[in-house]
Image (cartoon, rainbow, N blue to C red; front, side, top):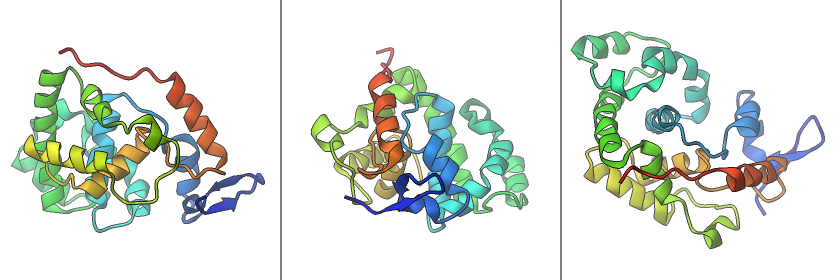
Length: 205
């Protein structure tokens, strides 16, 4: 059983949601709930890339700024970003001003367009990396998994950047491909119900 903390409502939650004020709402309404929207999936993978070497609190606090700077992570628009856009973003104090990570988002937007053309949607591709039922039975404790290693490897083959195995695992956790809320967490059962109702996306091919 993982660590829990009792909230103001007297209910147990994953301990990490008490580490920062921004985490509670994110934990209760987003983290682990299954997602099939391509822009949200792309956003999360990009933000996890920006988090590399930083804290998730830093990224979450700046998320609305990131959304504004990157057109709500519409990869069709980002794919057309130019050097002028890169210069603009490097001056934007509301985001993480890291040239390599900014350029990676633009690169990945182009790769996302290619993947949609090939698979029908990003969701159809990403949901292939959902772990099997036996692995879904209990919350995970590691920072990577066989699926995250495979996803990272396959994305890199397709030309994506800043998508290491740890980044891929955080993405898998957050987007609901696995339910990693600890067993006593009040949200775990809600996520489980959402996952049971969730219609897995299928590609066009």
